[in-house]
Image 1 (cartoon, one colour):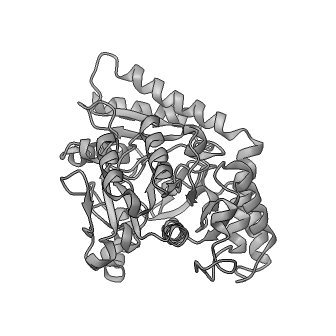
Image 2 (image 1 turned 90 degrees about the horizontal axis):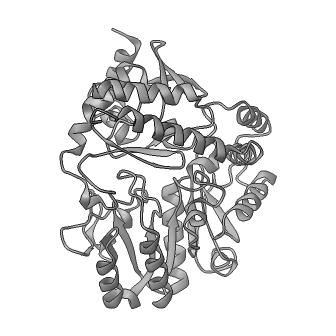
Image 3 (image 1 turned 45 degrees about the horizontal axis):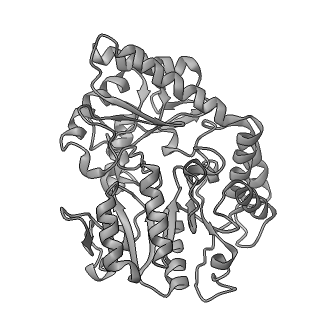
Length: 424
């Protein structure tokens, strides 16, 4: 029995499903989960010493690659000064200032420990600031696992209070409304009916948890206009898109400024970090200045703050976004050339350094409802074929891939070649 097999057997007896987060269990693809032993740059090794080219990159935060020397040195120095203070630290202020300088929606922000916590706290702030209770989300957007946001979209234009997970009381979600993405008529109908009750509309401006569902700018502009018209707030969940599309994330790319924005992933440089931010007027309604309570013992953790600050500084100093765009263009062009004369079993969707192998036979997929029901099964053999060649893609058809500055041109070419080989 290999070390991998042995540990997987033990894990299933010690952890629910053998994992600490469901998608890692490989239930959406063939085979068993891979246990990392170590990771560096664009590669990792499993427990048996097999080397893989990684396009998951810890689900996005490793924009500089695994174990970037500058980030590692910064973290090592920070650890020697203490792993947790439960008190303010200098890098906390520096990172907040950096984010404020980069993102158009942020005048002040508060650090938390995860994206889930960031969205949960931002929604509480929105409810407190508006004096309203109803929230609006969109099917195909994931905002963490807090109770009010674990709501499923039904077959109608709008659904109310339908928990998508056991253990979530219906009373916790009956004030959550759900709309399909990219549906102007449904959006207008909702605001005509419920706009006066709405505290906040929360959306991933670039949905990247149910495929890469690139939104029309006009749809996001309509959402911005309707929230303003009805006295509601607009929350952009940029946990994935923040600092990956550029300094100002999707807000800058779409030229739309939300009232509130949430961050995670890259902001922590690989450490557990989240944050939410907005205007001074909104953020000063948080305790200790205002009536909206939010707190966290590990918020502003000194090691995480150091890692995040180092990551953003490297991104800025090395003109990383131009490098990432160049790699993305190479992937796109390579697959376009590989598809000449043959039919690839997918269509590439790419925005900056995010990419997704979308289903064939569809135009631009902008909503969860537009995805074919059998898409997940069609992805299984692609994942298996590439994994056998030492290329690690997300173990789910609905998750996106990530490029990093550690990826080289030959890494992108290797991915293109493997996908073309699968098509043959």
